[in-house]
Amino acid sequence: GLGGEAEAVALDLAQGEFEGRPAWAIGFLACAARSGSPAKVDGQACASKALELLRSKPGVGGWAELFGHLSSLLSCLGEGADPALVREVKALCGRVQCARLLAKHGLRVDISALEGYASDREGTERTLLRSLASRAAARGNSSDGYWDELFCDATAACDLVYGSA
Image (cartoon, rainbow, N blue to C red; front, side, top):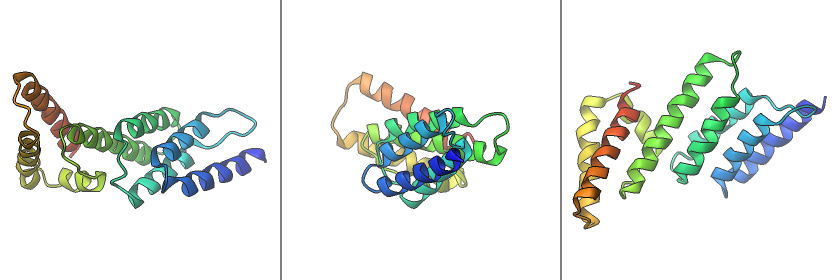
């Protein structure tokens, strides 16, 4: 049927565009997953493809936009979705959100590194926080408001990385 063809085209197009426009490719998958009949595309197939693409290039950036697209994909996974896939997409949303918070303060960490951090809280949390503070200090902003914001973002980042560990 048309649904199978549409799904194949959507997955191929996202694969082909991912290298040059990763946020666009993931956004396209989210849009395809939301599409209605007659060309219904399976949300699980789109989510699996998004995970595969992001595993292949974990430092893509564009975190805020990617977070929105991944959240949209997550909402397309209905009641009957594979629970392991839902957990994986939720965890990826958390890592992408964390990468966004860290990048905001000049610390670039890819999502695969954050996944590794989650499995070793004791060994990585202090290093992550020191790197964040050092990067922030190097930027030269010493206002109380900035450091309050940094503290809030660091707390949120740690919750995102280590809260699910």
